[in-house]
Image 1: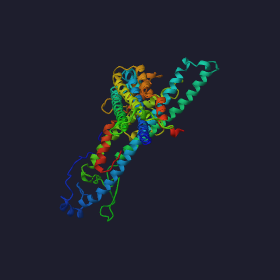
Image 2: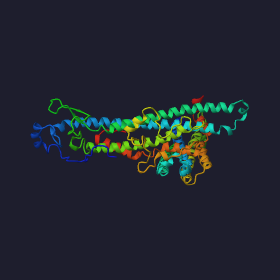
Image 3: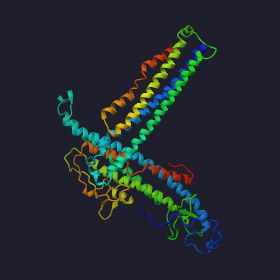
Image 4: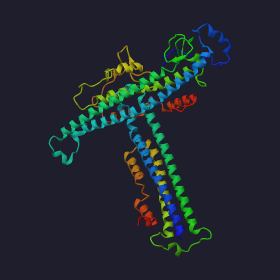
Length: 198
Length: 314
């Protein structure tokens, strides 16, 4: 039993690493998103030649500035797509950890009873705690990944029909990560590593 | 933009061993031989030319990086300047809350913002100066691609330099490939293409600098710059090196885009005394966009050169 708990704790350590990588990707995605949305915000202004002041003496400047900005916007959208794919990689990894975790108690010969699953030894987590934790963490990240996919795809249409308030709320959602409540994540890890905290 | 002597890029690039027998008789007779130079000389010339090109292009790559940092510094100074200017402009209508009871608060704030703008203006100007210097270096590099024989070729110790001492010495090894495929002229062509982008961009940035420096809440016409003014002592000399100064009109040439030859004379520009927020945002966006620098092409040029020289430069 204790051996299995140790194995689970190993898995949670792995998850923690993956979550650190998630955080890196998150800040990358936010900065890409900010860059893209600030271009979108000024698209209308740069399309109006009366906003060019003295620059209007430079023939073709509006077209050139617009073209360059659209190029950068496209580059940002593309790199966001890539970042979202990297998020998916993490979700797949968490899924695998979860699946392997289930195997530990349900696979083959070592079928455990419900009682065994809920048996608590000292401050150590029960096996049920471990299983629930793996499942929850995977679910959270999976839903958050789905949200990010839709946020990023919502951005391109805004380039055609910009709305500052929409951009703002999209960005807020992106930053907040509503599917990954910090306290809950912390709570899970506190139960799993209770002995280390004591 | 062919400013250099015309040389067809690929003339008689037969391998040197082919022409050897013929040339060996000649090397004893005359020094000022027409192209192609004697093979024995080419054998010595080639490594020297390779060394020179490697040097010049690695410098070019480092100046490109310096441009990027000078341009980005300039942009952040310009942004600060614009922000400070707009704060000052909107000061009268600004909601100050409890602060509004303080005597003279608006005037004091405006005074402070004015000081700030002065600071940002001088910073912006110095970033511009950095950019001019970078482009000057690039122009010089692009004119130093050739490798000339130094001293009499009859001397036992053959030396090379970047200056031509003999009108017959074109410094390009008779147009033969320096490394694998490209002749000196081909290297020059690529560097000219590259440098021209930066020259045009510098010129456009100058217009932005003039406009941003002129942006002020103070009573207009107080020592404000216009296009024909020298922005810092010696600027016009620097601009002449970059082909951006017209001796006929005695002012910098009007900015234009790389794909567009007809820039209207900058003189016809009507200056906006107090450009609004949108105009200022367009100025900042234009600064950022670097419309004259085709980044893909720049990378491509450095990739071509790097591959040819078997070194990675970027």
